[in-house]
Length: 395
Image (cartoon, rainbow, N blue to C red; front, side, top):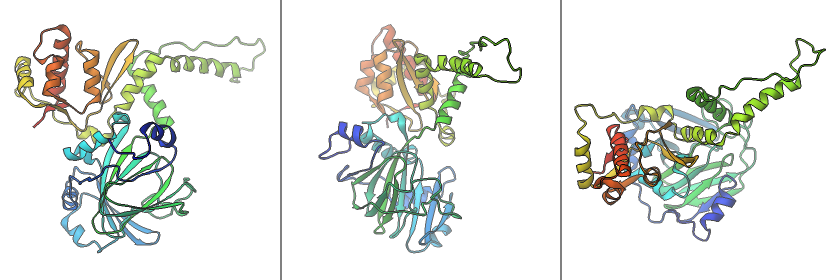
């Protein structure tokens, strides 16, 4: 876990998370980036990788290029004031995925992805604010960060620029960051990071933002799919001298009462939110692994033998797992679906959701070498997920 130094974790969660920024000096001491600037450049040439280059040409003049790029793109870049950004690095490089283990003090299902950037001296993406939480880890080199809480509004944007940059940026805080330092930024705080050398690399651990409209639409889709909300609208007591074209307050209140009845169903709400929180975005859905073919799939007995000899199982980094307890029953969610559990034990499903991998010892503990109904359910669940390659054997 990252080191908060003089601040305890509970204080961070109650006083800083989603409220105000925090500078964490040496949050990950002795950090060494598992990817180099050259490797980032190589990834940006791949068509399946989401990449961007931002070039600063003047004080409020920025150019945005979108990948995939070619080698000629880099040959044409200026000597300074440009930044390369690669999205979803945690889905591309296992060693980058491992960085997420240092942030398990927050729910893993809240994380969106890790974006990694490399910048030449003076490189930056402009002053801006986001609608999500982010930890900015200085992975190499130095960067200057300036912050503001003022003018973080939709009407404070520079016109005619492809990036959503703040036109007015009144600096309130100013810091220089070195390798291992971390800056936490909550939603709607302006920030501007400028590379101070040609070795500057930053990891952006971003968290999902949920807009009310998105929640409402998703909940409606869940009700439709589950077929659970079939209650009928009930008219109010009509007046004998009503106006036939008027929608009265009492009529609208009857509709409100009906909708409130489903919103107050805690079990239904929790089940829906488990699906919503683990739903993959469009890019991630396209990156899901190919399932094993029928010819590639061995018998479950052979799979059980492998569990006893292999190092362990690890989740595919694209997949999102979570669990909840609804009416004293543990539900497992995988990639937006309520998953068939095959009678697996509650404790095993919790472990499966909580951890990014399971060691051989944990697999044996779950029943890989035992005979019991719960052990059988645990193995069937693992086998099901392994056939889809949502879990793979650790190399």
